[in-house]
Length: 95
View 1 (spheres, rainbow, N blue to C red):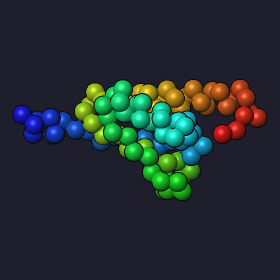
View 2: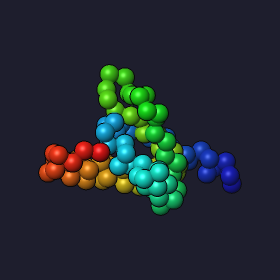
View 3: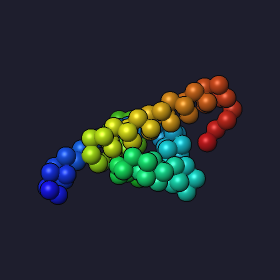
């Protein structure tokens, strides 16, 4: 029983620009915790200054059931897209 659930675990990696990591973390990591509770996935972000080779992107690792990882990936990409839009329309708003 438990074995089947374990083997259905997925690992998804996405790249998030350094300047948008804060948007996914939220104040004190609150947004990240919320996403994990909502989706049931485990979301980990690489440490500050740890970038994907040749980029200024941090690695976001999502693990969980296929449905959970898909949901988490969706929430994160929505958030990133939203933040990029906000920043594009308010260039002076930084951070």
